[in-house]
Length: 542
Image (cartoon, rainbow, N blue to C red; front, side):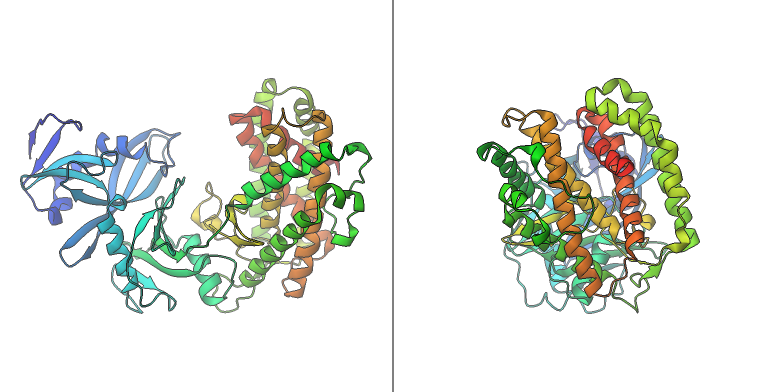
């Protein structure tokens, strides 16, 4: 290899006397490419999940061509090994461009190939690449047995490429909009298994015809050296929407709190609900309806119905073993207990080490939690898990208001990848459906308190009164949701257990979620630790 130190905005340019199609076979190129040049590029990307760790080295695990006729791009599977003795795999498609004015911010490496100067870039920035990917899916065979498998559903036929653009800022993946009708999501962090988002989306819409999630239209999967099935991308229907449910509820809750002022409502005289007790609309006192408004409760009923329909569909499979319902057993009980105890002890240590960051009501709640740690452990460890008679199914796994789109008076559920910190195998473990319900309840709790924290100067009531109003609102939100959800799943013959079992599983899942949140808040924004602390307090003092 010869290196020419060419003065440019991108420092060194590297010369390789091999054609682009053979570049990844060149050891000298790989040595240069996989050096700190690639590391510097990757750590700046929003989809890179290893920012808190130190990179030891990067290896090219596997690669494949994405091509059509003479147009060739490469899909790289990179193994990023960390000093802390673990690794991630990432997908990076690359292209070579020679136009000096193109993709100035997305250049990975300045390079000269066969004396043609240019740059290696992330191929998603190139429209020609996006068009090729779209066409490879649109023209896919019914059964593809090659190493790179393109698949399309029956719904995706007679389609011609028109346009493509980035969807917007994302954390862990890259989504592109085609023809203003379709979305392709490239998974950046990848696993040696089917991505749950691809697997669940295809199951729910191709096999079960669940209407309230984007329709599966196609995918790209790669068969690895050890015959593992690796999901690279999924193509879905674009859902026209007015934003996500998180933003919707923030706006609606703000209106509810403004009504406290405009109607001069005495917060402490409002009727209190029994927390996590099922409610119907006509169970809600008139004074609460007058305060909150009927429309918001009707919206929660719709969201509960869609959640129930999702679970009914996920629990109605009897052929595909990845989706057939199963019951609780000893191994699963041990797995859940160990998971909870490990997380719980970890968070207790964080609380004890961060008590100095808390004050007032937050400190009071934290001390209450620490004083009752043995009671909490025994509540979950001593429960007779053999009494659990409900079914476990595949669930969303990371269900919160940000994973739900609002379309007029309806809701669409997105992103079935599961908990970001869980292994791919843990994400595929069948869980009680109430795990998703608990995730949404914690999201309701956060939306209510976030509205208070983000509008401190706006509301005239004391913080203590606002927190009282927050818990009242949370109690009615969750009560209406449970009333609709349990009715719907029972009508759909999904077995979520008897009443005492449901209460236990909901409490378990809520505690697990709140304990997880507590560690995050203590490390990043202690002033918000009151939200999970209050959630835990509701459970241990209810």
